[in-house]
Image 1 (spheres, helix red, strand yellow):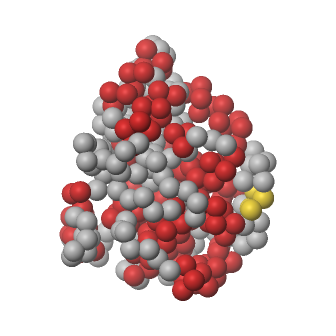
Image 2 (cartoon, one colour):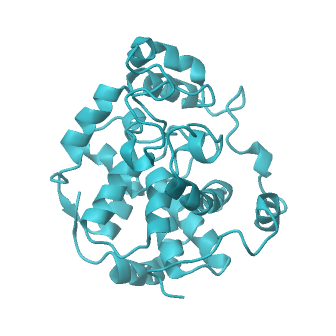
Length: 290
């Protein structure tokens, strides 16, 4: 299949979504799927505190400020592997499921995709999808980089994780922003909606401005994989358009690898580096603007 033109329903090989999840995950003896993304008394220390900060400060104006600061991509030039090496030092404070470094998470995600025989562009997407977390390298706190994303500029959904913390967000009391459409038009599409600022949107701009040849489903996976209120909770349907709905199965499929591949088992980078270096050279060679 031409890597520029993926076609068909990504779930077509199995009858329905539950069949896909059960066929691949959970691996016997490892964590069960219902134990992922649990936000309760068993959640590891720091996650609740992370979302208190995230929900308080991720306002519409804050997002505009960060886009003006970062989307010109003038902070530095780095290769993909240099960005990956930085992530080897970062543990995501928002993740309730695992405390491995981000490089190990990327490898687990990509290797799960690879094990199921998917195209190399899909494998590479798994390997790079969180590279936008290099924002922490530029001094950004984790609450402005990682965690679930959600639309700003309109009413907050009560299906956002820890919705009670959004009461501290000043936008929740601003009449301009607290209606279902807010500042947007019905059916305007995700590309015209501002999500809370983070690594997804940032990396999307890094790869597209670099002229990356990854196909559009990969770009959607990168840009929206943290937007759980949309792809998991089916919220904000008044804002999405038909093209978003067409791309949604790809994001959902990717998300299962992103989520259910997490394991305490550490991948061996020394055994995998040659393969992933070859994929980077094919799709994202040289230094990129960050």
